[in-house]
Length: 214
Image (cartoon, rainbow, N blue to C red; front, side, top):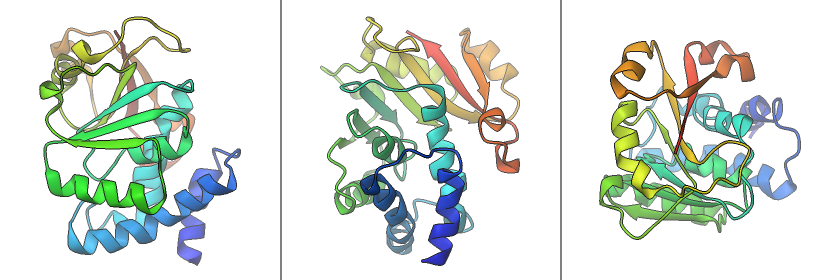
């Protein structure tokens, strides 16, 4: 319990306006992921004890860049164990998140976590993003899933054109390292935010939020 509290302080240090429900949901993530990780490995063993820094706060860097409006629909591409979708869904309870992955057993964990903390604004789908039809979203989010150009190719046809937010509709992805070549090869001109400028933690050195407008 004490370890969870200490880790959670890494989140509440930067975001102070959570409701008791949101705090309880964030608090529940560590024991839930520890339990599920014993059965299905969705987070690396060495990372599980840094869940709130490496996964939750990293995911919430998107919330530091954009305030999604109520009713917004967001697609999480290749959600894996539920990142960035689960932390964002807790943060934005009035926003709809659709979490997809091509690996079904990971989605079993995501659904179980969402059910356990009673997240009403999350749906999951076992599919590849490029196979989604008859759905539209204002934003797609992703974390270290594929090169920028591929992500854009997969999601741009699924995005609404009409903007209603403080950032234009589009792709928001979390990436790390030297991105110059990847951005050049994509032919895109993303906005780039250094996460360390949002959260001055050593872990976020050379980690970025990229935004590509629709």
